[in-house]
Image 1 (cartoon, rainbow, N blue to C red):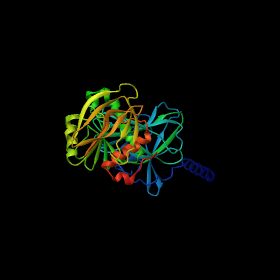
Image 2: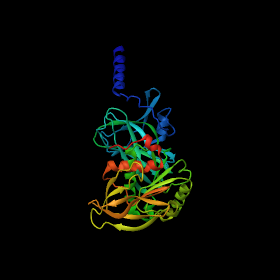
Image 3: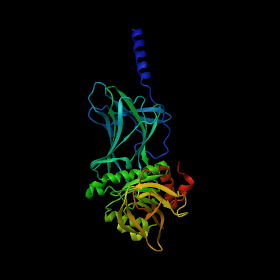
Image 4: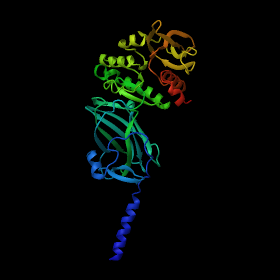
Length: 399
């Protein structure tokens, strides 16, 4: 009998040892969502609801007072296409950059990819993420600007659930762990205004809005500048509180009530950087006039932007951008000036303004494209630093 007890105890110890837990993750330097920890499995399972076929989550203690959630992926012998859980919540994400958390997965081979969705109203915002460190904890940021829209979401201010999924890649079981779920960019001084209202009246523009919002967001990320992404569906005075600079990456058909809120922001001392068509209701407030749409006469007609010497501190002399059209921005005497002009591919001035600046606004006559990335970063750092000089001392553009 003693030998049987000994064998059983040894068997239990071997199984416990086989389930090796990850090390404690680095402590977070950002505010966590509530609750930050769970007292037991039952509390975690009440918050995180598994989709059909997915196993329930479990709480694991990792030492140093740190905790993580274990997400089992039961792919072996099953037909589920993903292991997936919904965190039921009532979350206002309107004035932040996105969600951040830490991920640990010792064997990610059975997972084809990870996804994250945010339920809002009758729709979802969806995106994906990837393990960055195969041997340790990966810091994950799910950017709002990189999500796609499904259905008709009610805005980022009304998030009802966060869904995290691991999609089947092989008929093999695995598990992953998440810890330290929190917001990123909620206290940032810069906000990118994403024109989601366009989906209702001009759905053909929705993809472009997403593309150029992400283009601006990517440059700010490359520069390590803190920012939030705010849907124009979610703008309120409260959500703009603490913001010093708004960026309009491509906002066609801006609704009047949104323009009114931006006017109030400008009248309160706020600054604006914008791209392509300047909304008519903002023109008097920024001292810049709109103009006609100008298509390229030939490929290469708009090939680069040439900055006037010392017009804005830190800008490169020339920034490559092969644009196919522009939306004119015109100066107002005594209120604004041209700081950059368009060059063609032969280096000739076209006579068209590329960037116009006033005391509270810098406006570029086309969207931000990805060509000449090093000079784009230098240009954006200079434009942001013009209104937020603290960015100069804190960050430098990377080559």
